[in-house]
Image (cartoon, rainbow, N blue to C red; front, side, top):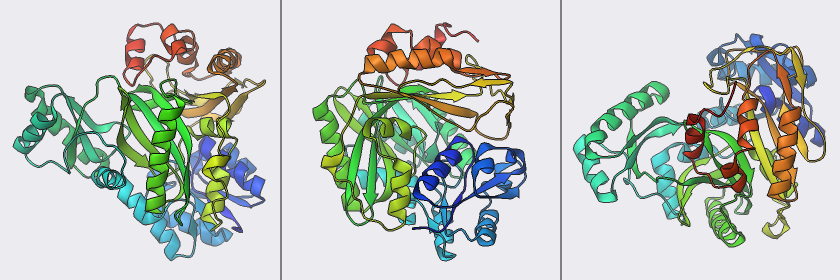
Length: 450
């Protein structure tokens, strides 16, 4: 097993990785910016190294600083978590060139799935259903118009190197298309340094369903069911649950095995998530994330499989010891992303936490690096923590979630807790009748109070 793992991240995911390392008996190295000197993962790690000033580009995104931290601590492996350098193929290659293991997929798979056009082509080749659209990037506006007419309006203009909703614009008619193309290209250029875009059919009220996969890089791979991530604001996930209220066992098994077979054919290594839009009983591939997901705990809660631990084991060269038949789905789990934001405007709310009381009780899990007196820095993502609740049924899960939300106290900063307290009392959400545009419509009613 690895002798020492450097955790190239911060916040709750750094703490989550640290705990898995401790379960495996592996010493850990926490890296941190000057703004994170008092962070919980820094306090609990075996060693810590300051790698730069608050700006992420000068610390958590600084490859030379991370390599130096590996060298001075003797870390022989790096876990990137999610975000930052987790899907940077060149970072993975540089680590390998310096004799350090990258706890993640093969660099070629990161690069392949990081290009949305190549990812879609690969999905088609592997037998995964895709959204109708252009075969690759579109050139002129005239070419885009011809493709849009073929697949039918409305269409979605998407950046090939996109993510997080940036570089995505909807064109509902021919008159909208040129403006959508120009806007998407400009956003993509600013965000990713690449203004290439492609077209897809725009689905009106789909659900966002993703399949969790695990492979050992030798042709063995399994799926661990689906997560429903349809509650989104501006293409950013807010709440996730598993299993999806929209799927039955047959649909789950069919799409799960389709994806698992594709990962076996690809000889995929580690954890990954294949994401789909689901409408009228049909799945449409949109992308694959070659890392651990923010919402991975809901899968862990219903399968009792530690995904981070398995990720480390497989990166170490161990074989996949879990067969598909060993995966059992038990009960229902829901995750709420608790952000330090205004629950109405979603304006970030950095500052010092005056009082902090996390909920507890049967079936309640908190993944958070927050504590009373902790100062939330303004330089990074506003995720304060994740509330994950499990129950034997969705109804029991919802009751426990309502109880846990009412117990959760965070004073000193604004949080999105009021949003979730309103959500769990809404009948449409209780009935599971939502889609990717539902939350925006819910927020427009003005029922969430700050």
